[in-house]
Image (tube, rainbow, N blue to C red):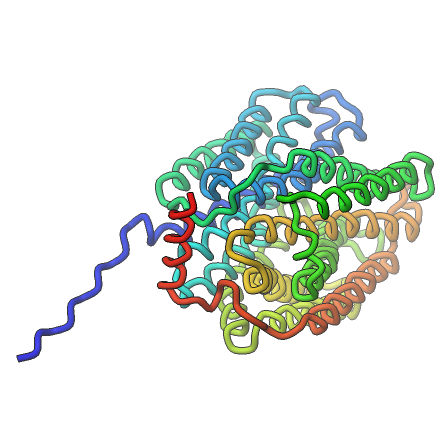
Length: 490
């Protein structure tokens, strides 16, 4: 008589919590990046600092995140992804506590720079998911992880606005500090360390060269609205960035163990994915940036709705919910048609969202609908990007490669912020003695973002079709084999 087939053991509680814990870390990172935005108008009064100094609470996070994301990604590939991920969350938590304890602008800027380390959470988490999950669960988990950036941003703005309106502003940082401490503990407990490593000596010279080049580039972009695009300081920063990054590229090509494998980046499947990430980051960021200003514009402008900060945050909330709901769909499309098609579709949907914004930006329901369509396209595009990278690079380089991809999104967002600001400043008219952007300026910003989204769609369609699969299509046994090989080589 045949014996019944044994019932496979259920996964341990820790294994079942791996994806939720990593996703919560990504959401917390995005919340941390956005919570300071509602504070910006009041921070000069609260800290006794100038508006220019206060703007560095945003700029410092942008710069440190851009520099540390590829550096920590490479460190994760070498020394352990969970270890570096936990360290990044710990730095974010320390930064939150510093902000909660002080009103000194210097301390706040330093603390926000520490919080920028959390930008590496998403690429490190995606690499852990590749190493730890079987193929049938990997696609949906990576899609969810990619969407956490938009979900957290949509949650962070209304949360921060509520705290600013009804409580002491330090409370917000105590809250993010407590959530960060919980995230560090949960990550250490629920996430297993992957033995997949790329041993070697850390490229210190490459890290400093990349940091110097990126700081000059992003500082010039972020300050261009204040100093002027043609100012000597901005031009000097761009020139310095070009020289430093050119020297850095030469150093990386000569290094035995480079920080960024430029030969890998020049492959069409990797390089075009990075180009698409930059363009998508530009198109995505204009949505939140312009929508927040548009709905808060005074009613006297003829188009503004005069909404409060809290109401503005609630207008962006449906976009975050949309990103959460559509991330599984992105994984299904990628499984059926390939991530290249998903990325192109997402960029096209973003362009359609901006077409809606151009058609009607006066009625609140149309504003929310257009913003939600852009968020839907962003979900599809952002969920496909890491899958493209995972399929194109060796397993031992996934964290550093995804770190570079996130860096390209960050650069795209920085350029988007500067470009949108330039358009709105150029198309302003006085209202009560104060220059206020015109509706035409907002529509031009939407048209610019939509055109960039179409360029991202073209870049996605130019990516070569799937070749040999480096990771997403392997069997569980193959993953274990990689682990065993890594253990033997350790």
